[in-house]
Length: 440
Image (cartoon, rainbow, N blue to C red):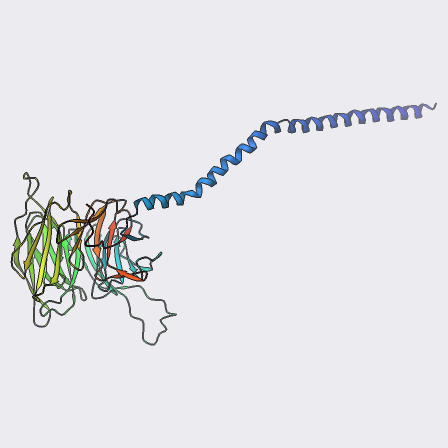
């Protein structure tokens, strides 16, 4: 055999052998990798079914949460609870109804005043517009001026309190109101550092309808000091100044006809001033006419302090007005009645086992709504009996309450509404209880 052919044949055999060995090793390697990949599968099988149970509970629990929340809300629900106005991002410090009860304004510590339209107290959502107070201040109180289109706002800053009167602009004549966006309310007048650096405790308003009053709105701002200022709601003019001379005020209010101003302060006495009107309807002077004494404290070691009061005005069968001043002195409840300037009074005690913090009388003068912390209670003025109680009306302390001056639509009917504001960033609407009901 040719040596060349022998070498060639040997080379072919060796190459084939090498290729066979290489191919065999490659196949074994791939097989081992496949086996190595397949071996972990048995322990991974129990893991696979274990993952879905971890995910399923998350989905399962995420859906029922609102349902559980609804159940919690239903447990806290009170029969008189009509609705909740949301949208506030901080504590709600004050509220006020317009004279026609179609609007409700709220003052919030977030620096925004919101004016809600109350077309139906049972509505799922309420339309409202915002009024932003100037930067650096936060709204502490609010009151409507002559109508629902004008509103007076008290704003607190580090340098003191300011008053602003905002008014909605009327659309221009000939313009298409349906296509024209309504401009935001504009500032018509403003006053700064009105009580020096003292904070404003209460801001209340009333229509000057008594005697020769011109029917305009009078606003009273009560400071935490001893002074009370009276303002003309439309123009912002100062109408009068009152000094209680009682170390520090707790609140002040005006009778609904604009005749009397009364204040509660550090001592146990309640002082009353009368607004005297001139023939042209302007305010002539403000004079001190009465001081209500006789309040007693629960603890004789310190002086009793009047800290809530309210006016009731209604017409008797003899066609003259009866005024009632409710003053709560620590844990002693006292209702003082006087006809014109007569000092007749009577007291009803034991209404409440804790100090009342806020109170307001219904428009018909028959129901007193009072609060302590988050608790809301309705009382009959004629008998002193408790009509109803909401132990946890809010999730935090109630800061202000107010009755609607007129009934508000509720579905197919109408109802007199009590609005409550709270630190919990909510405003609630409550129906008036039956005057014959009794929770005891």
